[in-house]
Image 1: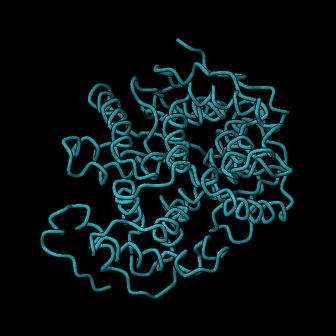
Image 2: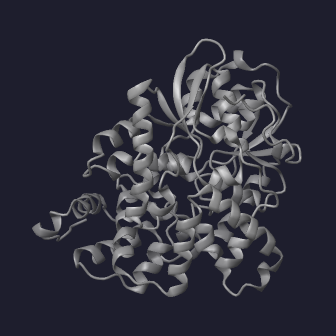
Length: 443
Protein backbone atom coordinates (compact mmCIF):
# COMPACT_ATOMS: atom_id res chain seq x y z
CA UNK A 1 0.00 0.00 0.00
CA UNK A 2 1.38 3.40 -0.96
CA UNK A 3 1.58 5.96 1.84
CA UNK A 4 2.25 9.70 1.82
CA UNK A 5 3.44 10.54 5.32
CA UNK A 6 5.68 13.59 5.53
CA UNK A 7 9.25 13.39 6.91
CA UNK A 8 8.04 15.34 9.94
CA UNK A 9 5.29 12.81 10.60
CA UNK A 10 7.74 9.93 10.26
CA UNK A 11 9.86 11.42 13.03
CA UNK A 12 7.15 10.14 15.36
CA UNK A 13 8.07 6.50 16.18
CA UNK A 14 4.42 5.46 16.34
CA UNK A 15 3.71 6.93 12.90
CA UNK A 16 6.88 5.37 11.50
CA UNK A 17 5.81 1.94 12.76
CA UNK A 18 2.29 2.35 11.36
CA UNK A 19 3.78 3.41 8.04
CA UNK A 20 5.77 0.17 7.88
CA UNK A 21 2.65 -1.85 8.58
CA UNK A 22 0.48 0.01 6.06
CA UNK A 23 3.08 -0.38 3.31
CA UNK A 24 3.08 -4.15 3.85
CA UNK A 25 -0.65 -4.41 3.02
CA UNK A 26 -1.41 -5.43 -0.59
CA UNK A 27 -5.24 -5.11 -0.44
CA UNK A 28 -5.65 -8.84 -1.11
CA UNK A 29 -8.69 -9.23 1.16
CA UNK A 30 -7.70 -12.63 2.57
CA UNK A 31 -8.34 -11.13 6.01
CA UNK A 32 -12.04 -10.66 5.31
CA UNK A 33 -12.55 -14.43 5.17
CA UNK A 34 -11.53 -14.91 8.81
CA UNK A 35 -12.67 -11.62 10.41
CA UNK A 36 -15.52 -12.34 12.87
CA UNK A 37 -17.07 -8.87 12.66
CA UNK A 38 -17.09 -8.96 8.87
CA UNK A 39 -18.72 -12.40 9.04
CA UNK A 40 -21.44 -11.03 11.34
CA UNK A 41 -21.96 -7.53 9.88
CA UNK A 42 -20.95 -7.92 6.23
CA UNK A 43 -19.58 -4.37 6.09
CA UNK A 44 -16.21 -3.83 4.39
CA UNK A 45 -15.38 -1.18 6.97
CA UNK A 46 -15.82 -3.82 9.67
CA UNK A 47 -13.08 -5.93 8.12
CA UNK A 48 -9.33 -5.51 8.69
CA UNK A 49 -8.86 -4.19 5.16
CA UNK A 50 -11.58 -1.59 5.66
CA UNK A 51 -10.22 -0.53 9.03
CA UNK A 52 -6.74 -0.22 7.56
CA UNK A 53 -8.07 2.26 4.98
CA UNK A 54 -9.79 4.26 7.73
CA UNK A 55 -6.65 4.30 9.89
CA UNK A 56 -4.44 5.28 6.96
CA UNK A 57 -6.68 8.19 6.03
CA UNK A 58 -6.89 9.39 9.62
CA UNK A 59 -3.15 9.20 10.32
CA UNK A 60 -1.88 10.51 6.97
CA UNK A 61 -4.11 13.57 7.11
CA UNK A 62 -3.39 14.13 10.79
CA UNK A 63 -7.09 14.69 11.29
CA UNK A 64 -9.24 14.33 14.34
CA UNK A 65 -11.12 11.04 14.29
CA UNK A 66 -14.75 11.22 13.22
CA UNK A 67 -17.63 9.19 14.63
CA UNK A 68 -17.67 6.83 11.65
CA UNK A 69 -14.01 5.90 11.98
CA UNK A 70 -14.30 5.45 15.73
CA UNK A 71 -17.36 3.20 15.37
CA UNK A 72 -15.60 0.77 13.05
CA UNK A 73 -12.35 0.74 15.04
CA UNK A 74 -14.32 0.14 18.24
CA UNK A 75 -16.03 -2.82 16.62
CA UNK A 76 -12.67 -4.56 16.10
CA UNK A 77 -12.22 -7.45 18.54
CA UNK A 78 -8.42 -7.47 18.24
CA UNK A 79 -8.78 -11.23 17.81
CA UNK A 80 -5.88 -11.05 15.31
CA UNK A 81 -7.28 -13.79 13.07
CA UNK A 82 -6.34 -11.46 10.24
CA UNK A 83 -2.67 -11.71 11.20
CA UNK A 84 -2.80 -15.51 10.99
CA UNK A 85 -4.43 -15.28 7.56
CA UNK A 86 -2.41 -12.44 6.04
CA UNK A 87 0.12 -13.66 3.42
CA UNK A 88 2.01 -10.37 3.58
CA UNK A 89 2.73 -10.34 7.31
CA UNK A 90 0.79 -7.16 8.09
CA UNK A 91 1.17 -6.56 11.85
CA UNK A 92 -2.39 -5.39 12.36
CA UNK A 93 -2.11 -5.53 16.16
CA UNK A 94 0.41 -2.70 16.37
CA UNK A 95 -1.55 -0.66 13.83
CA UNK A 96 -4.92 -0.88 15.58
CA UNK A 97 -3.28 -0.27 18.96
CA UNK A 98 -1.80 2.95 17.59
CA UNK A 99 -5.17 3.94 16.13
CA UNK A 100 -6.87 3.43 19.49
CA UNK A 101 -4.28 5.55 21.26
CA UNK A 102 -4.72 8.26 18.62
CA UNK A 103 -8.51 8.14 19.05
CA UNK A 104 -8.25 8.28 22.83
CA UNK A 105 -6.12 11.42 22.60
CA UNK A 106 -8.09 13.28 19.93
CA UNK A 107 -11.73 12.19 20.02
CA UNK A 108 -14.30 13.22 22.61
CA UNK A 109 -16.72 10.38 23.07
CA UNK A 110 -20.31 10.78 24.27
CA UNK A 111 -20.52 11.04 28.04
CA UNK A 112 -21.97 7.53 28.48
CA UNK A 113 -19.05 6.02 26.55
CA UNK A 114 -16.48 7.99 28.51
CA UNK A 115 -18.10 7.04 31.81
CA UNK A 116 -18.24 3.34 30.94
CA UNK A 117 -14.63 3.22 29.81
CA UNK A 118 -13.53 5.14 32.91
CA UNK A 119 -15.35 2.67 35.16
CA UNK A 120 -13.90 -0.38 33.42
CA UNK A 121 -10.37 1.03 33.56
CA UNK A 122 -10.73 1.82 37.28
CA UNK A 123 -12.26 -1.50 38.32
CA UNK A 124 -11.28 -4.51 36.20
CA UNK A 125 -7.48 -4.29 36.66
CA UNK A 126 -7.85 -4.15 40.46
CA UNK A 127 -8.96 -7.46 42.03
CA UNK A 128 -10.35 -6.00 45.27
CA UNK A 129 -12.35 -3.33 43.47
CA UNK A 130 -13.51 -5.90 40.94
CA UNK A 131 -14.71 -8.23 43.70
CA UNK A 132 -16.75 -5.42 45.24
CA UNK A 133 -18.19 -4.57 41.81
CA UNK A 134 -19.10 -8.22 41.24
CA UNK A 135 -20.93 -8.31 44.57
CA UNK A 136 -22.87 -5.21 43.56
CA UNK A 137 -23.62 -6.66 40.14
CA UNK A 138 -24.77 -9.90 41.74
CA UNK A 139 -27.30 -7.96 43.81
CA UNK A 140 -28.45 -5.98 40.77
CA UNK A 141 -28.54 -8.92 38.38
CA UNK A 142 -32.30 -9.64 38.84
CA UNK A 143 -32.96 -6.11 37.61
CA UNK A 144 -30.75 -6.35 34.51
CA UNK A 145 -33.70 -6.39 32.10
CA UNK A 146 -34.80 -3.01 33.40
CA UNK A 147 -31.55 -1.35 32.33
CA UNK A 148 -32.04 0.88 29.26
CA UNK A 149 -28.43 0.53 28.10
CA UNK A 150 -27.46 -2.88 26.69
CA UNK A 151 -23.94 -2.37 27.99
CA UNK A 152 -25.16 -1.97 31.57
CA UNK A 153 -27.27 -5.09 31.17
CA UNK A 154 -24.19 -6.96 29.96
CA UNK A 155 -22.20 -5.80 32.99
CA UNK A 156 -24.88 -7.07 35.39
CA UNK A 157 -25.38 -10.33 33.53
CA UNK A 158 -21.62 -10.94 33.55
CA UNK A 159 -21.57 -11.33 37.34
CA UNK A 160 -21.04 -15.00 38.27
CA UNK A 161 -23.56 -16.70 40.53
CA UNK A 162 -20.81 -17.41 43.05
CA UNK A 163 -17.68 -15.37 43.75
CA UNK A 164 -14.80 -17.53 44.98
CA UNK A 165 -12.99 -16.70 48.23
CA UNK A 166 -9.63 -14.98 47.93
CA UNK A 167 -6.78 -17.44 47.39
CA UNK A 168 -3.79 -16.59 49.52
CA UNK A 169 -1.69 -18.46 46.95
CA UNK A 170 -1.87 -15.27 44.88
CA UNK A 171 0.10 -13.37 47.54
CA UNK A 172 3.82 -12.69 46.89
CA UNK A 173 5.75 -15.81 47.94
CA UNK A 174 7.69 -18.77 46.63
CA UNK A 175 6.51 -22.38 46.29
CA UNK A 176 9.14 -25.12 46.48
CA UNK A 177 9.24 -27.87 43.87
CA UNK A 178 8.43 -31.46 44.64
CA UNK A 179 11.70 -33.29 44.17
CA UNK A 180 14.74 -31.88 42.36
CA UNK A 181 14.27 -28.42 40.91
CA UNK A 182 13.99 -28.44 37.12
CA UNK A 183 13.04 -24.79 36.58
CA UNK A 184 12.53 -21.58 38.50
CA UNK A 185 9.57 -19.66 37.12
CA UNK A 186 7.51 -16.60 38.01
CA UNK A 187 3.74 -17.01 37.81
CA UNK A 188 1.71 -14.05 36.63
CA UNK A 189 -1.38 -14.16 38.84
CA UNK A 190 -3.21 -11.45 36.86
CA UNK A 191 -6.05 -9.20 37.96
CA UNK A 192 -9.60 -10.09 36.87
CA UNK A 193 -8.83 -13.80 37.07
CA UNK A 194 -7.99 -13.46 40.78
CA UNK A 195 -11.54 -12.25 41.38
CA UNK A 196 -13.42 -14.46 38.92
CA UNK A 197 -11.74 -17.86 39.27
CA UNK A 198 -9.06 -18.67 41.84
CA UNK A 199 -8.99 -22.35 40.82
CA UNK A 200 -6.82 -21.58 37.79
CA UNK A 201 -3.80 -20.18 39.62
CA UNK A 202 -4.12 -22.79 42.38
CA UNK A 203 -4.09 -25.61 39.81
CA UNK A 204 -1.18 -24.01 37.96
CA UNK A 205 0.93 -23.83 41.13
CA UNK A 206 0.13 -27.42 42.07
CA UNK A 207 0.95 -28.66 38.59
CA UNK A 208 4.19 -26.74 38.16
CA UNK A 209 5.57 -27.66 41.59
CA UNK A 210 4.60 -31.29 41.02
CA UNK A 211 6.64 -31.23 37.81
CA UNK A 212 9.73 -29.81 39.51
CA UNK A 213 9.32 -26.05 39.25
CA UNK A 214 10.01 -23.51 41.93
CA UNK A 215 7.14 -21.07 41.47
CA UNK A 216 7.60 -17.44 42.46
CA UNK A 217 4.77 -14.92 42.82
CA UNK A 218 6.74 -11.70 42.54
CA UNK A 219 6.18 -8.75 44.86
CA UNK A 220 4.71 -5.82 42.93
CA UNK A 221 3.46 -7.73 39.88
CA UNK A 222 -0.20 -7.42 38.91
CA UNK A 223 -2.31 -6.47 35.92
CA UNK A 224 -0.51 -6.83 32.57
CA UNK A 225 -2.03 -3.60 31.24
CA UNK A 226 -3.93 -5.23 28.37
CA UNK A 227 -7.38 -3.93 29.34
CA UNK A 228 -6.35 -0.28 29.33
CA UNK A 229 -3.90 -0.77 26.45
CA UNK A 230 -6.71 -1.89 24.15
CA UNK A 231 -8.77 1.12 25.17
CA UNK A 232 -5.99 3.38 23.94
CA UNK A 233 -5.15 4.49 27.49
CA UNK A 234 -1.41 4.17 26.95
CA UNK A 235 -0.21 6.01 30.05
CA UNK A 236 -2.33 3.84 32.32
CA UNK A 237 -1.38 0.59 30.62
CA UNK A 238 2.32 1.44 30.69
CA UNK A 239 2.20 2.29 34.38
CA UNK A 240 0.83 -1.13 35.29
CA UNK A 241 3.08 -2.92 32.81
CA UNK A 242 6.12 -1.12 34.22
CA UNK A 243 5.36 -2.52 37.67
CA UNK A 244 5.51 -6.04 36.24
CA UNK A 245 8.74 -5.37 34.40
CA UNK A 246 10.40 -4.07 37.56
CA UNK A 247 9.03 -6.88 39.72
CA UNK A 248 10.16 -9.64 37.37
CA UNK A 249 13.51 -7.97 36.71
CA UNK A 250 14.24 -8.16 40.44
CA UNK A 251 13.62 -11.91 40.32
CA UNK A 252 15.66 -12.33 37.15
CA UNK A 253 18.60 -10.51 38.72
CA UNK A 254 18.31 -12.29 42.09
CA UNK A 255 17.64 -16.01 41.69
CA UNK A 256 17.21 -16.05 37.91
CA UNK A 257 14.08 -17.11 36.01
CA UNK A 258 13.68 -19.74 33.33
CA UNK A 259 10.28 -18.40 32.37
CA UNK A 260 7.49 -16.03 33.29
CA UNK A 261 4.47 -18.33 33.18
CA UNK A 262 1.15 -16.84 32.09
CA UNK A 263 -2.08 -18.83 32.22
CA UNK A 264 -4.33 -16.14 30.75
CA UNK A 265 -3.52 -15.93 27.07
CA UNK A 266 -4.85 -12.39 26.67
CA UNK A 267 -2.24 -11.28 29.19
CA UNK A 268 0.43 -13.41 27.52
CA UNK A 269 0.00 -11.68 24.17
CA UNK A 270 0.51 -8.30 25.84
CA UNK A 271 3.47 -9.30 28.03
CA UNK A 272 5.22 -10.80 25.02
CA UNK A 273 4.80 -7.40 23.37
CA UNK A 274 6.36 -5.40 26.23
CA UNK A 275 9.58 -5.13 24.25
CA UNK A 276 7.72 -3.25 21.52
CA UNK A 277 5.57 -1.21 23.90
CA UNK A 278 8.61 0.10 25.79
CA UNK A 279 11.06 0.24 22.88
CA UNK A 280 11.54 4.00 23.19
CA UNK A 281 11.40 4.24 26.97
CA UNK A 282 14.01 3.89 29.74
CA UNK A 283 12.68 0.42 30.60
CA UNK A 284 13.35 -0.83 27.06
CA UNK A 285 16.14 -3.25 28.03
CA UNK A 286 14.29 -4.83 30.94
CA UNK A 287 11.03 -4.95 28.95
CA UNK A 288 12.80 -6.87 26.19
CA UNK A 289 14.23 -9.29 28.76
CA UNK A 290 10.76 -9.92 30.18
CA UNK A 291 9.20 -10.46 26.75
CA UNK A 292 11.93 -12.93 25.85
CA UNK A 293 11.12 -15.34 28.68
CA UNK A 294 7.34 -14.78 28.86
CA UNK A 295 5.64 -18.11 28.14
CA UNK A 296 2.11 -19.40 28.01
CA UNK A 297 1.76 -22.16 30.56
CA UNK A 298 1.34 -24.71 27.75
CA UNK A 299 4.77 -23.77 26.35
CA UNK A 300 6.37 -24.64 29.67
CA UNK A 301 4.34 -27.78 30.29
CA UNK A 302 5.03 -29.28 26.87
CA UNK A 303 8.65 -29.82 27.97
CA UNK A 304 7.87 -30.94 31.52
CA UNK A 305 4.82 -33.17 31.33
CA UNK A 306 4.84 -36.65 29.84
CA UNK A 307 2.89 -39.84 30.32
CA UNK A 308 5.05 -40.88 33.27
CA UNK A 309 3.59 -38.05 35.38
CA UNK A 310 0.03 -39.36 34.95
CA UNK A 311 -0.59 -40.88 38.38
CA UNK A 312 -3.98 -42.36 37.58
CA UNK A 313 -5.94 -42.40 34.35
CA UNK A 314 -8.57 -39.63 34.38
CA UNK A 315 -12.17 -40.43 33.72
CA UNK A 316 -12.77 -41.23 30.04
CA UNK A 317 -13.90 -37.77 29.02
CA UNK A 318 -14.33 -36.01 25.71
CA UNK A 319 -12.88 -32.51 25.95
CA UNK A 320 -13.93 -29.84 23.47
CA UNK A 321 -10.95 -27.54 23.18
CA UNK A 322 -11.68 -23.85 22.58
CA UNK A 323 -8.67 -22.04 21.12
CA UNK A 324 -8.54 -18.53 22.55
CA UNK A 325 -7.76 -15.96 19.86
CA UNK A 326 -4.96 -14.45 21.92
CA UNK A 327 -3.32 -17.88 22.05
CA UNK A 328 -3.82 -19.18 18.51
CA UNK A 329 -3.52 -15.85 16.68
CA UNK A 330 -1.75 -13.53 19.11
CA UNK A 331 0.91 -16.03 20.21
CA UNK A 332 0.60 -18.55 17.37
CA UNK A 333 0.27 -21.43 19.84
CA UNK A 334 -2.07 -23.90 18.21
CA UNK A 335 -1.20 -27.48 19.20
CA UNK A 336 0.41 -27.51 22.65
CA UNK A 337 -2.80 -27.45 24.77
CA UNK A 338 -4.40 -30.18 22.66
CA UNK A 339 -1.22 -32.25 22.69
CA UNK A 340 -1.03 -32.02 26.48
CA UNK A 341 -4.65 -33.02 26.99
CA UNK A 342 -4.22 -36.04 24.73
CA UNK A 343 -0.93 -36.89 26.45
CA UNK A 344 -2.72 -37.40 29.79
CA UNK A 345 -5.49 -39.50 28.30
CA UNK A 346 -8.37 -37.24 27.30
CA UNK A 347 -10.19 -37.43 23.97
CA UNK A 348 -9.92 -33.98 22.39
CA UNK A 349 -12.35 -32.57 19.83
CA UNK A 350 -12.60 -29.14 18.24
CA UNK A 351 -15.57 -27.08 17.06
CA UNK A 352 -16.22 -26.02 13.49
CA UNK A 353 -14.49 -22.75 12.57
CA UNK A 354 -12.12 -22.86 15.58
CA UNK A 355 -10.38 -19.72 14.29
CA UNK A 356 -13.43 -17.53 14.97
CA UNK A 357 -13.64 -15.49 18.19
CA UNK A 358 -16.12 -16.27 20.98
CA UNK A 359 -16.82 -12.55 21.39
CA UNK A 360 -15.20 -12.01 24.78
CA UNK A 361 -12.08 -10.07 23.71
CA UNK A 362 -11.23 -8.36 26.99
CA UNK A 363 -13.92 -5.74 27.58
CA UNK A 364 -15.53 -6.19 24.14
CA UNK A 365 -18.46 -8.19 25.51
CA UNK A 366 -19.25 -5.26 27.81
CA UNK A 367 -18.82 -2.48 25.24
CA UNK A 368 -20.22 -4.25 22.16
CA UNK A 369 -22.73 -6.69 23.70
CA UNK A 370 -24.87 -7.25 20.60
CA UNK A 371 -22.02 -8.34 18.31
CA UNK A 372 -20.41 -10.23 21.18
CA UNK A 373 -23.66 -12.06 21.86
CA UNK A 374 -23.94 -13.27 18.28
CA UNK A 375 -20.38 -14.57 18.34
CA UNK A 376 -20.95 -16.27 21.70
CA UNK A 377 -24.05 -18.08 20.48
CA UNK A 378 -22.22 -19.27 17.37
CA UNK A 379 -19.25 -20.51 19.38
CA UNK A 380 -21.35 -22.36 21.96
CA UNK A 381 -23.39 -24.02 19.21
CA UNK A 382 -20.29 -25.32 17.44
CA UNK A 383 -18.69 -26.51 20.69
CA UNK A 384 -21.76 -28.35 21.93
CA UNK A 385 -22.28 -29.93 18.52
CA UNK A 386 -19.27 -32.14 19.37
CA UNK A 387 -21.12 -33.56 22.41
CA UNK A 388 -18.30 -32.96 24.89
CA UNK A 389 -18.27 -33.82 28.59
CA UNK A 390 -16.35 -30.63 29.32
CA UNK A 391 -14.98 -27.60 27.47
CA UNK A 392 -11.38 -26.51 28.02
CA UNK A 393 -9.86 -23.11 27.27
CA UNK A 394 -6.74 -21.15 28.18
CA UNK A 395 -8.19 -17.69 28.83
CA UNK A 396 -10.46 -16.50 31.63
CA UNK A 397 -12.37 -14.12 29.35
CA UNK A 398 -13.33 -16.95 27.00
CA UNK A 399 -14.27 -19.13 29.96
CA UNK A 400 -16.64 -16.50 31.34
CA UNK A 401 -18.12 -15.78 27.92
CA UNK A 402 -18.75 -19.38 26.90
CA UNK A 403 -19.63 -20.50 30.43
CA UNK A 404 -22.44 -17.97 30.62
CA UNK A 405 -24.41 -19.90 27.99
CA UNK A 406 -22.97 -23.41 27.70
CA UNK A 407 -24.81 -26.44 29.06
CA UNK A 408 -21.58 -28.28 29.91
CA UNK A 409 -18.89 -27.12 32.36
CA UNK A 410 -15.92 -25.14 31.12
CA UNK A 411 -12.52 -25.31 32.82
CA UNK A 412 -8.99 -24.14 32.21
CA UNK A 413 -6.68 -26.58 30.47
CA UNK A 414 -4.33 -26.62 33.48
CA UNK A 415 -7.16 -27.77 35.75
CA UNK A 416 -7.58 -30.92 33.67
CA UNK A 417 -3.83 -31.50 33.53
CA UNK A 418 -3.56 -30.99 37.30
CA UNK A 419 -6.34 -33.51 37.86
CA UNK A 420 -4.71 -36.08 35.58
CA UNK A 421 -1.41 -35.83 37.46
CA UNK A 422 -2.73 -36.17 40.99
CA UNK A 423 -4.64 -32.98 41.74
CA UNK A 424 -8.34 -32.60 42.60
CA UNK A 425 -11.08 -32.83 40.03
CA UNK A 426 -11.82 -29.33 38.68
CA UNK A 427 -14.42 -27.68 40.96
CA UNK A 428 -16.51 -26.58 37.97
CA UNK A 429 -17.07 -30.29 37.26
CA UNK A 430 -18.13 -31.07 40.83
CA UNK A 431 -20.68 -28.33 41.41
CA UNK A 432 -18.14 -25.62 42.09
CA UNK A 433 -17.82 -26.29 45.83
CA UNK A 434 -14.22 -27.40 45.97
CA UNK A 435 -12.38 -24.09 45.70
CA UNK A 436 -8.83 -24.23 47.05
CA UNK A 437 -8.86 -27.99 47.72
CA UNK A 438 -5.35 -29.37 47.86
CA UNK A 439 -3.72 -25.98 47.47
CA UNK A 440 0.01 -25.75 48.15
CA UNK A 441 0.90 -25.10 51.74
CA UNK A 442 1.56 -21.42 52.36
CA UNK A 443 4.67 -20.13 54.04
